[in-house]
Length: 263
Image 1: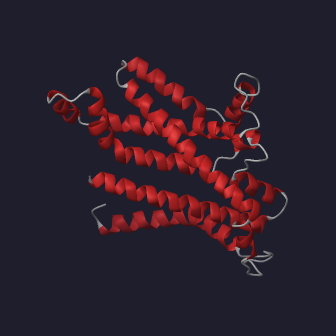
Image 2: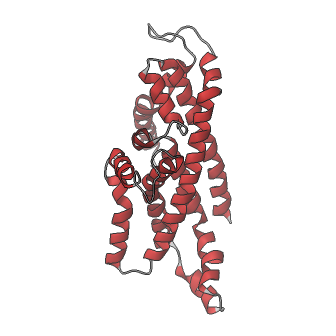
Image 3: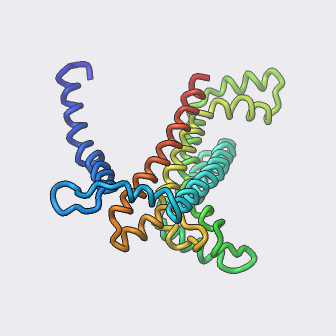
C-alpha cells in the first residue's frame, strides 16, 4: 500500500474484521473470568475466586498435564517430521508426494477418527497403551506431526544447496553437513514448527476426550467438564490461564527463532 488512502482502507478493513471476529470473543472470555454473574450487557460481581481455583488443585494438575503432553508431543513431532522431510528429499517427485500425503492424512480426517483408530489399535497386546498417558501423547503427536513436516519441507525447498556443496567439497561427511550446515540453516523453521505444534497440542480436545485416563487429564478436558456442568465463569478463567500459558511458551520460542534468524 503506497498511497495514504490505501493504507487507511486496509487498516479500516482490518479493524472491522479483527474486532468482532477475534478481539471481542477474547474480551468476553476475559470479562467472564472475573465475574460471578452476567444477566445484563456487562458482567457483575467481580471476583478473583475463579483464578484462584484455576491455579490450584485439579485445574493446576491439568495445566501441568497439558504442558507436559504438548512439549513431548511437539518434540516427537518435530523429530519425526524433520526426519521424514529430509529423507523425502532423496526421493523422486512422486515419492515425495506419497510421503506428504501420508503425513497430511491425520489432519485431513476428523480428530475423533484419529482417536478412535488409536483406541482400537492399542487396546490389545502386544502394544497395550489404552488407559495410559502414552496414548494421549501419541494422539497429539500424530495430529501435529503433519504441521512440522510441512514447515520443514517448505524450508528445505528454499534452502540454498551451495552451502552444503561447499562443505562437502571441503571434505565434510554427510553427517557433519547435516548437523553443522543443514540443521542450523533450518533452525528458524524448526522453532516455528515447534511453536505451532505446541499451540495445537495445548488446545486439542476431540481425540483427547476419547483416550485420556483418569490420571492424565489435560486442561481442555477439565475446561470442557466445567462448562458442561454450567460453571461457565470458572471455565472462562481456565481458558484464560490456558491461553496465557500457551502465549508465554510461544513468546519464548519466538525469541529463540529471532536469534536463530540473525545467526
